[in-house]
Length: 160
Image (cartoon, rainbow, N blue to C red; front, top):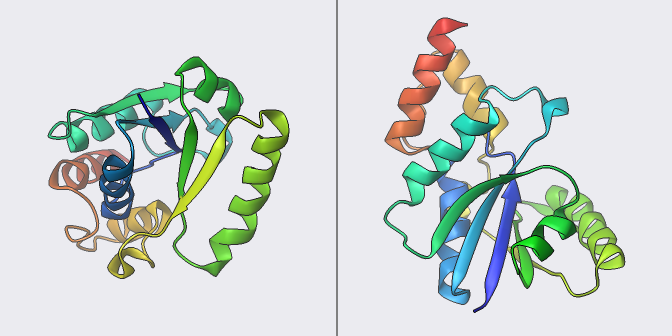
């Protein structure tokens, strides 16, 4: 079984993330969306909330699982019997950082390949950070995130 890991903070999951997931499903038997525990990023949603939001979004895709991890990505990939990591590239600006990470991961574990995928051009401008900012300012994010994520954003930001 060919398994790919799609890591990220997913704070929150966007339609761009979903697009990459749907593309990965076409290439792999199993896709694991791995939500990273990264408190240094000051996430709006805690790890459990982010995993739950991903699970709801991919419920219609039986070959996709959502999970969380902490520590080295290559160790997590190994623990889940993954063959590769998929990363979304929105723009040239993403490439330099992602390329560095891919090379470092290869140095740590040469068995783990990194595959770069581009989302649809309509999502190249989209990021979780921008979605959170628009939502904080009362803007409509319905075309950027699934409906349940929009509701979660609204609920979370109304408490802030």
